[in-house]
Image (cartoon, rainbow, N blue to C red):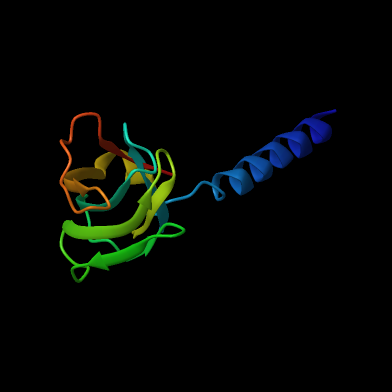
Length: 132
């Protein structure tokens, strides 16, 4: 009976040790999505925005149907301009980051939104969300 208890205890320790090694440790590189909330879905054709975070972005890709203009990546703040039809809640930008676990530390600020006739809109009702 003692031998059985010792073998069981040893098995429990081995399983516990193996499961501990599976927890992610350190930063997890990946991508985050930038989505636009707009009161004029489909009626705007350009946006200028800034993404700020705890580390420099590693990449940036425009959403479907959009064209991306950006300053060189580096530093904790990066400016972008996107042209094309801007739709509400669509992923307008995918950004590469060094740690997706820090998603709450990334934010987006809109500098301007333009209609197809190049008229600037009031930014009331517009916002950006950075999500996983």
